[in-house]
Image (cartoon, rainbow, N blue to C red; front, side, top):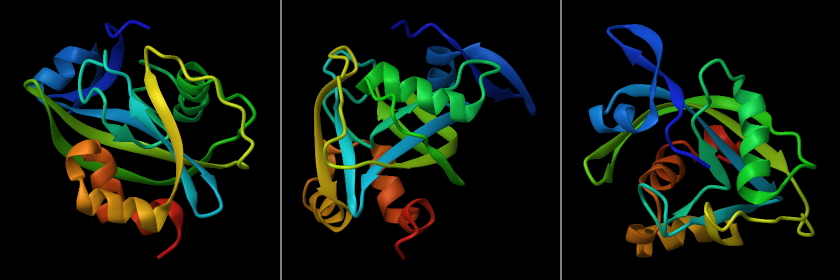
Length: 175
């Protein structure tokens, strides 16, 4: 998977196709997609691969990405579930969107306008993680995840910390 893709970013008030890395270097507001796969109160989270261009080795939501220029957000969610995790059997459903800005290290900033999707799965969900994207997967209860983030925020991505602290009820409908 190459990182030199064009993503939808706002420049001078207009949405334009822009290189993903350049978008992050400039801290520009841009479109993103985040997917949360649930088994009841448990969330499937991933540990990002060590070779990722930012936040390597940190725990994140099930998957997240940037839609390619002109790509439908829901199609993007399905694409990344398959590319990152080998998941093809789920139908992600839209939730209210989220916007956040976070320093992700290395001079890069995520300022994302996020289309959020949730998919229900069972504990026997078949996965086949791409090792270039994901180094580990695990199911965690949402309340336990909040406790883990409070105890060790440094092992979680900035966006997962933001989602859980500021947007849990709107994403999961549990508050």
